[in-house]
Image (cartoon, rainbow, N blue to C red):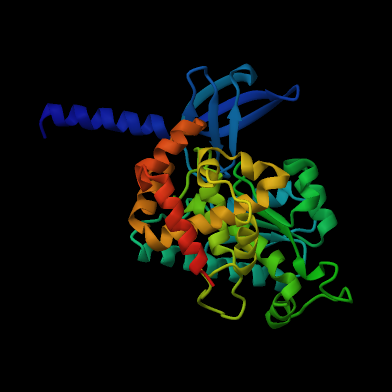
Length: 380
Ligand SMILES: [Zn+2]
């Protein structure tokens, strides 16, 4: 081996060591010091940091909050499944137990049969998600650490916990995926008021399926699948957490996968199926849809963030995604790949969002819109 090769190798080792070293960051939050050990995913010019700890949780530290930052020689690694399990049980209220599947750690204080039902549903969804994209030429990665789901026994205890992350919005959603913690949180839907007369607990998967296949339960189940889809998309490297993924993409994609399939015990037949409720919503919106609707959907997230326009935005995002995946797949895949390589914590301007959309799907938005509406007109 010549000297130059050795030198290059040494430099490479030093660089990779620097990337993987464990960092210790102390910052102040609400007047109290918080200590983190993890890896730095991004460092802003002003000194702000994005830190990922060994549980996979992200913390954005503003320069003014930063107290100290040191590094040691320990290489960074995520917690093992066993360590993660022990760490989370310490953080959760007493009474939680764990159900482990191939990809998930499910923490629950409801019945074991419901936790198992969720675990099986999520594994089927994950498999279907991977198969779907791999068949379409998109290479996905295995999650870096087990996917964590928290299931509370009832909506009241769920809300108490969810409030710490969502504030008052906790009362209006039956489950959520947190980009910060990377976890999904929900409650046992079998206890939902209106779905059953008595408060009995279920003892078999067949009973749970029977209850949750009722028409009144479909949207509830769709919501927990929707949130689980977000989690999968951010953990299989389809999207990147804290990169600027437009909501029309992340939400449209979650809706694309959300239609429940509880009949099958292995496959998942409904991916890409037409969502009757979203299609009906979009058709109502079409009665007074502005001609620049795609533009407003794509250029920023405003329509998703306002109560009066959100449902129409979700419906249009789903329909647009359906159209692009079905009729312009190579462009759509190229576009997804561009998005996931966006820098962390940098949010694009409306002009940049539009430029990226045009880069993938062409300049003629009017022609695209005409094709889109014709396509939606043909959906049944
Ligand atoms: Zn969503």
